[in-house]
Length: 156
Image 1 (cartoon, rainbow, N blue to C red):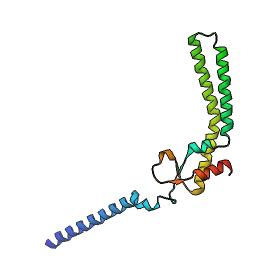
Image 2: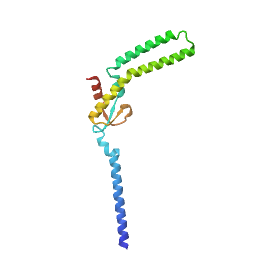
Image 3: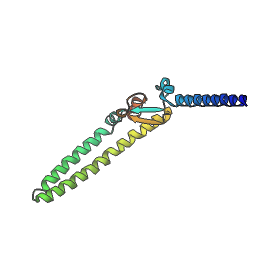
Image 4: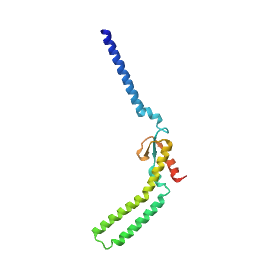
């Protein structure tokens, strides 16, 4: 009987030790400690400077020029049409004008943003990167794709 209790105790301790080693191994393999050496080029996380990509897009200058012309036209229209309006009417007309300009801004700049996003996806897919963050949201790590996406957008 004494042997059976001693054997059961040793077996229980051995099982608990194996379990703890397994949990510890799993924790290390899932933590950043196990991946710290691979945080560079082999990462499947990318980053881009999206604002720079939009600013460097070839279509941006034309969109900005068109928007500037729309704003000038809206200002001229507002000045001429609101000259004889009461304050409340002027305020309402001003809000309508601002809404119209915002819609025009979205119409002009959304295609540029879509093209930038498509280029980011294309470069990320070609490199096997599954997640891309903007550089403003990244503190450390991630493969920078900005230059490659810029080349794709500008053809340079």
